[in-house]
Amino acid sequence: MIAFTVNGQERAVDAPPLTPLSTVLRERLHLTGTKVACEEGFCGACTVLVDDEPATSCLVPLAHVEGRSVRTVESLADGDGLSPLQAAMQANDAVQCGMCFPGVLMSLTALLARVPAPGEDAVRDALVGNICRCTGYEQIVEAALAAGEEPR
Image (cartoon, rainbow, N blue to C red):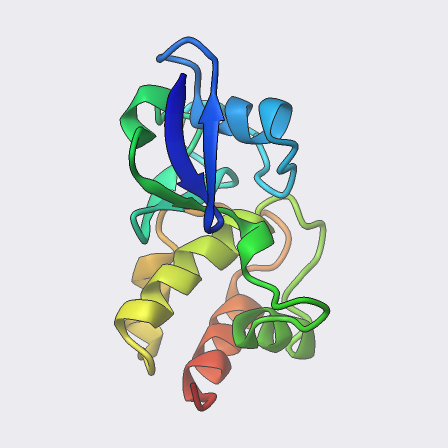
């Protein structure tokens, strides 16, 4: 059994230590917000936060998160309300197909936690590991800048 915290809840999973975290999240814990696309760590769709740092969960072996904290996109909304970042994404029409979006949200959540009011360059740097084929990134960047302006 490998024990770790997921979205604030203690969990223990009986799986081989080298099982990708993305597989455990989706298939064992039924947290399907984490998307799996390339399975090579290239696209960023499966990005989650491990101890508040972005990580491509398709490349993280389950054993690596033992005793650590993992946050998925499911942790962002507060009950029925969206997080400020999610609300800004919606207001700026930043979501299109949605495949990349959980990873984008997690990367930007980590940035906004470190830098509450980032500049455009910081937002673009935070998105380097996330490939979006639909938006061209402009609405995503605008939304992240707007969310950074929101009072916390």
